[in-house]
Image 1 (tube, rainbow, N blue to C red):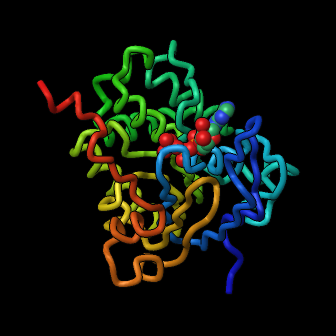
Image 2 (spheres, rainbow, N blue to C red; image 1 turned 60 degrees about the vertical axis):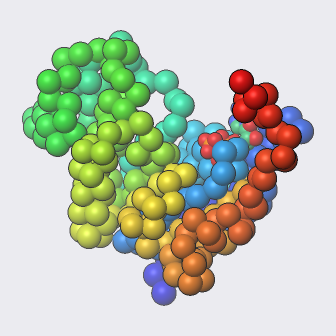
Length: 253
Ligand SMILES: Nc1ncnc2c1ncn2[C@@H]1O[C@H](COP(=O)(O)OP(=O)(O)OP(=O)(O)O)[C@@H](O)[C@H]1O
């Protein structure tokens, strides 16, 4: 069996008294579309932030293609493309300038940066907005320019935090197509999402986490166990039933 492209070992992060991620281990094999699932506050963003060098773990390791993200960041990050969630962009740049900045930062030749930036803007429906400042972009446009920045240096591993959030259905389909093509050519994608149908139709391996702990991981079929992913997710995570009197004021007018 080949080495996983991403291996998380006992990753742990505490914020004050809150244990956000609790000894979480995970293997992502090469060439997979991996879905990281969990309810709000489960620890998905914290996990991805530790795996991508954005947030230092309290304990544990994140290894990308054999390189330790925290011991040797340049080696680990060289072939990684990251779409973080909630991290500020340099939004006083236009979309085209932001892309150019990311490409040059990755050491790409200027000519390639320009050509790829134009292609990415066109593919993601941002060609007309290329000269608009990112601060004036909608939430979905920001998501798309963030994805373009993650793609411009043609990484082999993509780590995407909620890549479909706020994105319209047309762009969503384009992104799915881009990601499928990327995986078909040998790339690996790790994405977080709350949308079960999307993960079920797109991913071949998944992990379900809650309260910072791993509840289940494996191929889609191994995790689903013959049920829909939604049903399995609810069974594992537990539903939150409303009491009969809960929000009664909302029904009384
Ligand atoms: N910087 C921080 N300071 C304090 N607590 C934090 C911080 N970041 C995250 N947390 C807490 O850690 C837990 C995990 O948060 P995280 O953002 O990783 O969850 P998530 O699974 O990405 O949630 P969502 O699906 O809502 O985006 C939550 O309880 C959150 O309140």
